[in-house]
Image (tube, rainbow over all chains, first blue to last red; front, side, top):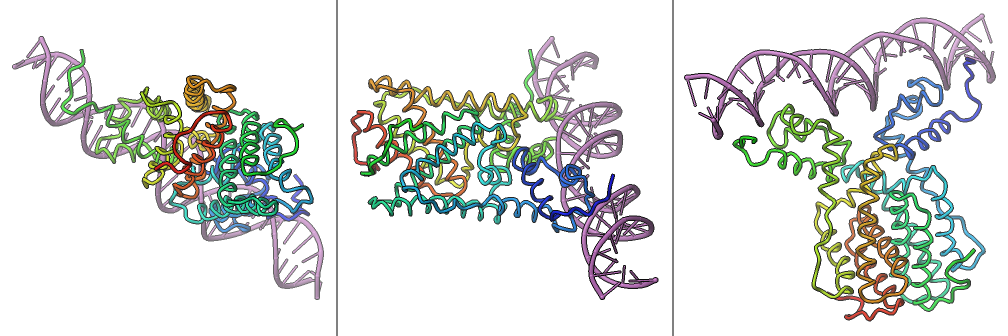
Length: 193
Length: 193
DNA sequence: GCCTTGTTACACAGGTCTGTGTACCTAAAT
DNA sequence: ATTTAGGTACACAGACCTGTGTAACAAGGC
């Protein structure tokens, strides 16, 4: 075919493809040959952009590390909205759990850098919860934020195995109870639209 | 009948070793050569007991599928005791998360039999919670049992990444709030020793 | 023109993995 | 003593993996 030198950044294309395959099939299950073949480039080109598969794995996880964008909505809505968003993602059939948890499960405790970024991600989400809780004056925001983080990862793990978006709803109901118990006034009923 | 070999049951030794290595290092990361070498047997012997690595993986997961033994303790203690037991296991440095979640994360959705046993395990634990809740007359035991199961898997996932046994305590505190909210009279304070 | 940059095609080294084939050994049961 | 089940040693096939080396090609900038 046309040996087009690819207008969009080749590095981005490689990374986007690696991301998709790593996430859907597992890191160890996908070889660099497979990634290159999927894009239609030679393996040599891939190695011209990433010095090793490990570098590609790191870039993959770094790419997945996205902070939630600041929102104008009330903190309680943001917190509970997290579980609505999860439920929507569970319904998509290309959802395969948390890429960080999966990577740690797959690559073991050996891999220092993978664990490091996974810890950073988990902690960043916990802090996001904590800051929202502080905004609404919740006492013991630290503990409650941890509990919310546990609920998030719990319903993700459950959905990974069961493929049941209702797990997000169960987590949301639990989160609602915890918030109310902490004195937070939660708007709608337990089954928000 | 089968004449006894000199050794105790070789099949058990293979399975026990495979279990340890699969769990600690990951299924794909451990080859049959490694398992055989660890026991000090030849690879041929291993294949005389298990027709394939897949069969060994299935046996490994089946072995991990243990039901909690019936207990005389009050249901509430059994439920909350689950999180104490988890905290103890998190403190051990050979804890590496839930073997079923890890297997699904590692082997992908392709593998039907792995997913099947993982689902069965998750559901069996949920039903264990549900039956205990029914014993103490909790209304909506189904939903609460699901929430408890989410908390269990959530703190396991969190600990897998963070290596922090406090995650079990956080989950236990959340579980306590949920139980109280359901009308259950919970004995000790939120930090039972 | 020419030169640099990026890509391609392809071979290959060196390692790992699963699974098999074969011949020999050991010890217990008969 | 013979049979036989099970274990050992070891080679090997065939596949896959990561990563490199090399020569050719295509295009834009100078």
